[in-house]
Image (cartoon, rainbow, N blue to C red; front, top):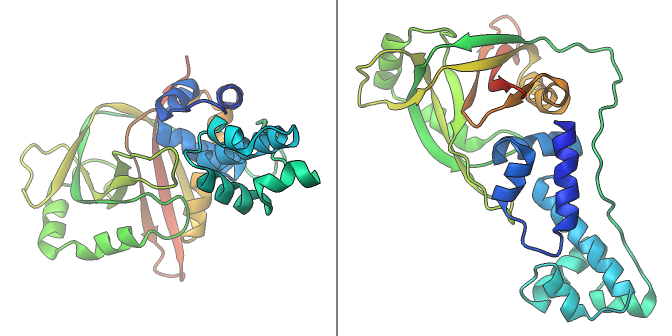
Length: 288
């Protein structure tokens, strides 16, 4: 994955003055756009959009130092108006584009390179599970995409589940893991803005064919799953597991993420406050 990440960085560099589409980025990455964005974020600390914007403005700064016209630079890097470019440049650098050539003030944002710095000391447990096809059945809602923190829309979705829906889920639940799971799928993303939506489902795994109309159903083909168990303070430990999966395990493993819904479940410890056992299930395939 590190090789693919650096190839994408090179492609972005070659395309800073051209339209960069999400489809092209995803093709270079070799994984779905959503998963690539998460891997990128966990490794770099930046969203892909933030990185591209910073690189464009950094190169724009160089062009302005070379006395290129502000109007030409703005359009070169995809800004449709002078006002839009001026606001973005001022917010990023702290000074106006017109001040660069006159005063020589400058700000830069260098190209990224990805590598793994192995510091050791903390292992990461996982197992590979082959699963037959099944269904997710539960209650779902289209919600805004969020990379960090508690998503209040998911909290509200959980509160909205009726007792009748809970009973239906309990009746049809017949495949491991026999837990209430959280599933995210059908992600979209406006590539040039930090926005977009996904469908989130809270439900169970089942192989039943006759499922109540009270529940939303999604068919899942047979997949290979990488499973990451964890226990500790909640939700920090679960969030750290997601982060380490993308930043540590995926780049060096023999597996790659496929474009399919992953899921997780959490069992709160009744004896300890804010302490839980969780599992993250990620659909994967062998590289090559």
